[in-house]
Length: 609
Image (cartoon, rainbow, N blue to C red):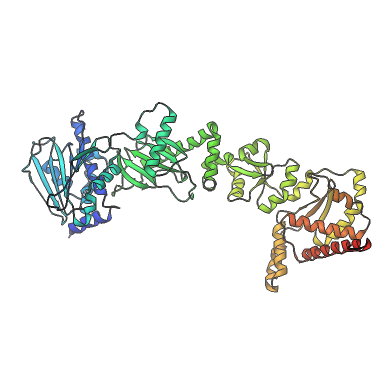
């Protein structure tokens, strides 16, 4: 045996009216929406009908609670429609002519008027239908879920609807002229039908102008200025630029504003969206692609579906297609900037650099769009990757700041352009390049590769430095460091230390092994065994350097060895390499030796005078 659900209607009304909506002020939106829907329905019957909405604040002479009266000259309701549309919750009325024209969830769920019960305990609807028998009907609904319908004792002269709300004591703040004005402009400022507020003996037209994207302008500059001024008015801040938006899917139109600050790329922007010229939400998140974090939008949609609370768009195929179309417009904006105004694009990338880079790592299409416009630090100065690739077919980079500092001066002097990939996301972006653009060549560069391009010595020069090479080789053999002597720029650099890709790792592990206990040292020993040992670091002496040329002529072997050791330590320090215990001892011994030698010289010439 089947049973019917037992529904506590008062509880349902309380649940929907107090928990479905984000703020009690949405009752103004719902009443304006009902009024404009009724005007649109009447226009289908009488196309020339202009339509208007009146909102009147009626103050009680005895100081009692005020009443709000919403009036429209729309299609009105018949007695049968009063029962069905105002007192049926959850009924789908897609097949009904009136509701089909609304094309939204309000008619399907029958919950629009329930928002009024957040500010009053009773509703009075007085209506005359443009298609009925000319009678004026009254519908009186109560917070407890009961209602009554009867012919009105005060018939309306023309078709339309009046809704009376008497303020509840705890909601009186919503029944002041200033608050009603603010809510009516907030929700209905873009409506195509005039809204008039009558309060304090004055009548005010609340929406005299169409939205700025529908107005005509003398020039593109005038249009841009007007849109930016509108963005300042809506969001209370200045924007870098504005982008007109239009999508056939969902019949979306509006404008996107480029933010003047860099938000986190995971912080999706909240947009102001209108549905059929009525404000739907100020915090819609699903309108634009996730990567469009650098803009805030104001848009109006004619063909998207709202959720039941009418505070977001329903996720469906139409919204997905609209989102794709709007995303294409934003992409095209960036492409146009690249060709027409690259300085503005560079400013935008500089402003939203981290967010742009992070998105490019996650979105291959966006990566292709922006990668060549991203700036990188190089040994030849700042330049975009596009500029770099025009001059250098192989993209060479280092992935640490220490490595970049080590090679920067020498590489620049040789005309080598090496990218600094040490900044956030830069190395990952460069490593992704050949995966997204198969023709790209990318190589991790190290200081050990620099000597390959240095000038070789002549036979006479090789003979002149043979002693220096021999002493240096013997002095540095305990440190697993090979020696070479070449000529390179700049001449003020005496030596260049270069190691293999994992050289810095090996040095760190070796230093940690020396400073830790026996158990942990054995673990580190295993890590060292796994790293490559076939390639040794190299110390390259620069024969263009005056000090190195003088060293080649030194006959005192002890003095020559001491100088070589000090140049080795200096090269390590300039390369920001950590010194192990033996190298620290070398540094101390060398400093003491140099001091001692200097003291000996002073004593030989008479000492201090």
